[in-house]
Amino acid sequence: MKSFETLLTELNNGILVVTLNREDKMNALNKTVITDLNDLFDEVYANDTIKGVIITGKGGKAFAAGADIAEFKGLNEEQGMMMAKRGHEVFNKIEMCPKPVIAAVNGFALGGGCELAMACHIRIASENAKFGQPEVNLGLIPGYGGTQRLVQLIGKGKALEMLMTANMIDAGAAQRLGLVTEVVQTVELLDNCKALITKITSKAPIAVAQVIQSVYAHFKDGIDGFDTEIRLFGKCVTTNDFVEGTTAFMEKRKADFKGE
Image 1 (cartoon, one colour):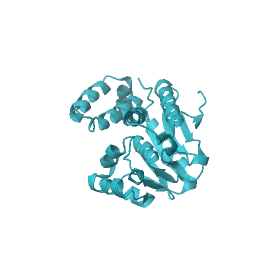
Image 2 (cartoon, one colour; image 1 turned 45 degrees about the horizontal axis):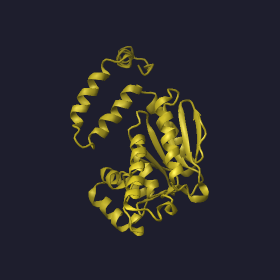
Image 3 (cartoon, one colour; image 1 turned 90 degrees about the horizontal axis):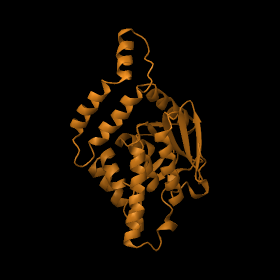
Image 4 (cartoon, helix red, strand yellow; image 1 turned 135 degrees about the horizontal axis):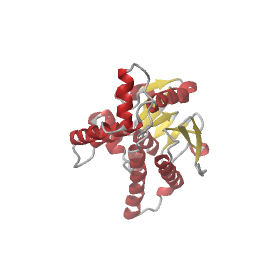
């Protein structure tokens, strides 16, 4: 795997741990981080040895404490739209990844950092995690999908409150609202994420990918999620994994999926 300027990567047993590596900047997302994430996920899509991804932040203070505000100065309308469009493209690539992606949220996940976490399929938080979209404090709105994904995850009313007040919520509130699925002690965060992704990657890879595609079809304009489910169910029954899974079930043994 290539090296990245702003990311640290470690691949073990098919699990790729990606660490945002700008600790001195609270792992803020600048243009280089966005480019590195884009290039990294190109490799995730293409590399069959990568079965799942965990994204976290360097150090104990922040997952990613927003975007790099210095890059916003002097932007005109078109440049602002292009910056947001680029963020959308990369985060959509993460969201639609056919392999499971878990955000291990350690510390602050604010602005673009919260948006990155929401682009992942599942979020697990450490006890000290805090979430927020503080863009209105800067005269902005979220630009990397925050107004859409936050509503999808926690509902319109609470999302509007968070977006308009810029209030942060702690890990416990995030779990109660459904923004994260689990809150664990900081020292246990990565181990918990690895255990979960190991369980997911033990299942049929094609079926997992089709689950992801089917679920997100619900939120795509002009796409009928029910029709997508029907179509992808039909594809699943033609796979070798389906034959292996059903055979293993009948023989009362563990299935050995090949992703075929």
